[in-house]
Image (cartoon, rainbow, N blue to C red; front, top):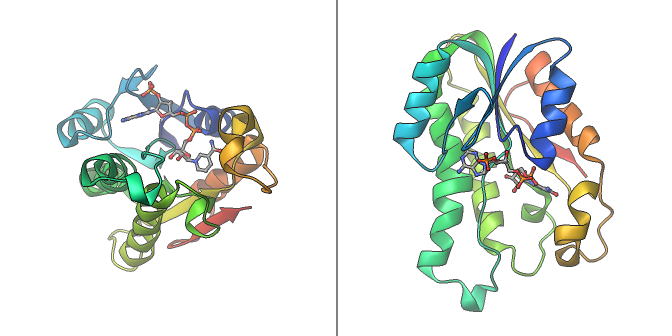
Length: 199
Ligand SMILES: NC(=O)c1ccc[n+]([C@@H]2O[C@H](COP(=O)([O-])OP(=O)(O)OC[C@H]3O[C@@H](n4cnc5c(N)ncnc54)[C@H](OP(=O)(O)O)[C@@H]3O)[C@@H](O)[C@H]2O)c1
């Protein structure tokens, strides 16, 4: 299959790309993407990416951010990053990409454990994750041409522990290559509307 991986240079995206490469043609995307550049916060940039790639069999997103702030410090402006990036960025990849997906193709988006197991400072990211999960579940019943759509909810990964583990007291991190297998399941399997929890 021909698979776009947005965020392919990232901690999780690298492992997804490595897991897919033996069996698929992987198009590595990101703001500084190796094969194609895209900024998911810009609908024009997403549209340009799809014009460049043409038709594909799968689109994976392993990018998207939000501000980590206490709710008491979270302003509407600071909350916008989660809305524009993790929420709208991912959903726009689907809205603008559906016509480029071959019949029976798949979208796989990324949520995260903090929507189910809250951490301090995590409300904005959890909001975006929950929105993506709800969109995936709902969109799955009506996307045409046998197209499937799932998301993966990673726990904090071992490779990110030194950087952000302090926010996840008491969590048991999981290896990123284990998280990557859930994306492979989404691409190669037959399920739709799922949120694969890798906790
Ligand atoms: N790491 C964890 O423990 C963990 C746990 C749960 C959920 N998640 C979620 O998993 C996703 C990936 O996390 P990660 O830790 O692998 O991230 P990461 O290491 O920071 O990598 C982010 C990747 O996304 C790309 N990117 C960043 N902003 C982008 C944009 N606006 N448009 C397109 N590409 C962009 C980056 O490449 P460029 O700089 O070239 O754009 C990079 O390839 C995120 O949504 C994160 O919230 C991560």
